[in-house]
Length: 281
Length: 333
Image 1: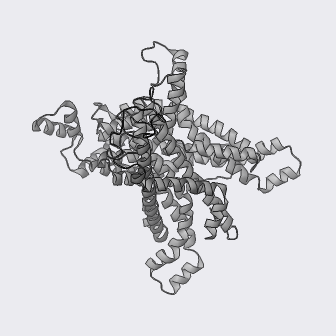
Image 2 (image 1 turned 180 degrees about the vertical axis):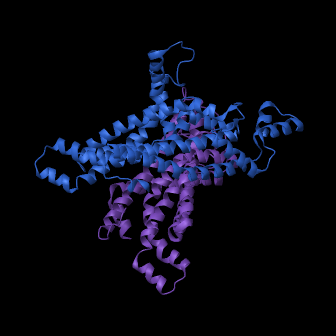
Image 3 (image 1 turned 180 degrees about the horizontal axis):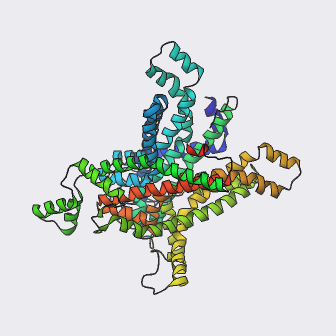
């Protein structure tokens, strides 16, 4: 609770919370704010923004409501971003924990796999994965997670290596605690915080990767995404630039919100942890 | 001098040896992934030429070795790799290596220019921001860089081309050079440069913001170091302290960042090249995907992994040269 208190006191923290709260509310209540299918025709095509009160942000080439697209796009963007980051962090924690605890050959082999995922550009991997598996929401989530789990895995392993030498872990071994229980109850909780510190970066990168994938036409064609809206608007960029510009602004605001929250969290954590020994970060 | 060259050579050799198993993992995993695709290159090829009967398909499969089992094909691929043969691009009907060699220079020019620009601009602005941590100027720089850091490159590319190419008509909208311009020598170079301004800007902005932030953070840390306090106590001028002591110390993390970002930047070039229609490596990746060209995609992923390894090796060498404390032992991790 102390952390939340510290977070709200930081200007970055409160700004990030407000931005993300608005976006999440928009995403959750997208169907109430903009009822119906956002891919449905709702008016005259290429209506400029602020010219019709019923369609405040205008319409695209096919007469689809731009505001409805942006509102529903918020849902996809946040959902994919959060799910991909969660999957990446879970996989990273799992692999890092095993590598750090097992040591020896298992550690060596797992870390070489981590290396392999780190040297292949995540976006190329996502591109290849989606093209092989076919574009759908779960596939896009996995594709993004595949390119993002290596960093949390490396971080977790480093953390586990330092934790497992600590006295309380040795004590748990001495009293005959099962290795599985030691891993989950003694080591894992301590290994999570540094990974959480980078989680916002992973979420932001996931949101941007999703947008880039759907911009290239590798998203699910049946859902509205900001990336696909930008791509669609590109066809009429000269005459109706707002079609590409508006969803892009939504994207930037979202990512700024995530980074602000992350920065606030980092500062709040530094505030609550000053009494503790830092360790090697 | 001789020992430092020796040390560098040892570092290079050890790094290259260590990268072989990692590259093997990349090869096997990519192979398995592309293997999972429904249909093979022959299906994709037949689709593109409008179909063919079973004998044609069978002959093609035999010609490409696609009729053999998966493990024997993987073995074939790996042994061919040892001879630097990356296979045959189905959609371009040319060797994969030729395709990549033809496209890579454009991407390297794009990435090299973007990195140089981002590094120079980002570190300079970072020094300006970090010369007085927590000042109004510092806070302003931090906020603006956070926003710039959040702008997706492909969207920025569109906006830049809209403003500077469509409306102002200062710069060309797409391509790497004017087609059939008949230019040569310096004129041609200038033409390519004009074509690269917008894509380089779109790719570099996010890294400029990142480098600014890393440099600023490094400088904020360096101000607390003992020798900086000592330099201030000695009464050295502020500019001298900022440049010689604080900024110099903060440059190392920036160089590390270059290596860490190499893979991301290579990935980012895919969308940038697609927007500006630059016939580069990233656009080739997109073409490989749309042409269902598994051998080409495989080659692209592999070459990008090698590139990232080489960039990181270069970064390590630069770091070892910059910081004598980084010896052979520390660089081995």
